[in-house]
Image 1: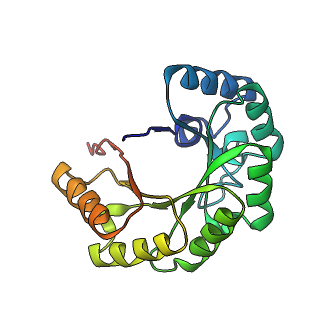
Image 2 (image 1 turned 45 degrees about the vertical axis):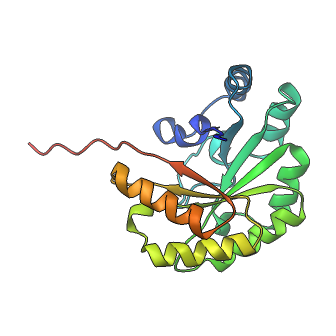
Length: 201
């Protein structure tokens, strides 16, 4: 079974500083639900990996923003993504309380423990959890297998590999997914990028 996660309100935020108005976000979520999209990512929690000046609402996903969307579109399966250094246990509890169903946690393969601990707590709090490996093209395959196994042990529901650099070829992507499907029992996701090359004149 294939499920889709729309990431417009978060990943698209890099184009407008995450300044999507809440009323637009609500209309966007409603349209996606009516279109049959299973999961809708509505933003980062407390910022991206590095601080972004004057970041908009979809870059921080405060409680009232989550709650407004949940109230307006209660059937939507809302998703928030976060870097472990930006959130704590209270954030996890409050996101669940206000309507988030799935928490996507970015994990660093050279220091996975903060993300793994958050995964365990989020699962205990009743959230589904996706562990997200960014810049997957730069991760050693044996390291990926080892950390993915730790994610499974921590209770992760999904392991998602992201081609943040837009450099994976189809055969490389297929190999990564097959390796994870053969070495873990959790669902596997893929987040693609098609980054245009820089033109030097």
